[in-house]
Image (cartoon, rainbow, N blue to C red; front, side, top):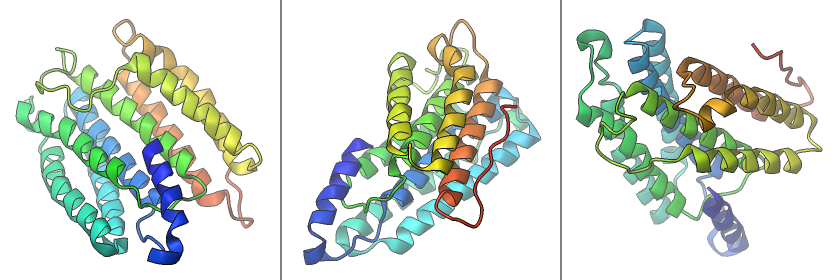
Length: 264
């Protein structure tokens, strides 16, 4: 979300006139991350033919994204922010309904239109968030953006893995990403984040762990049709996102520093 970062600088430049914008980039990035997590869990539930654990994961992701949206709605001030919050809420209601309607466990399949909504609606919401230029900047916006992009790649990977036709059952290319482009983009973002936070011990160690774990799934992203391993991609992405979340929560406190265990 590079456009959002530029918009943040513009917003800071006019603060004396308009006051502090209430919606932050952190709010928006957390919501975006939640959307891709819901999409990933939806498709993983299909891959695992409706396994109870993955149904629980999906419920948890829906709840997490819902709470992120509530923060955006609560913090929105002024007409532009309120408009954004209302538009996101309207799209979210449709998305949550679709994401909650995976019938793989009960019927052995899921309706094509449901899959289409799960795939398309997050991209529509992302467009609205990208167009919003008033978000206030934060110290770890680049790291949050990194986590959201990683989760987006994984959600696409699982979408393709869940569909024998190569992820095209939904009948649309809206929001689709190509791994040949996404992999170098993610690696560029990761390298930039590591450079930006090289003096931040906790975050530096966390990003080092992300870099290490990324190596375990990179080749599968690049050569999907030769070596599809959805369970490993799902698992390692979850670990990397959890590591980033932990680092953001703890990196700035002197009470406790995050510790990151070995790759599982």
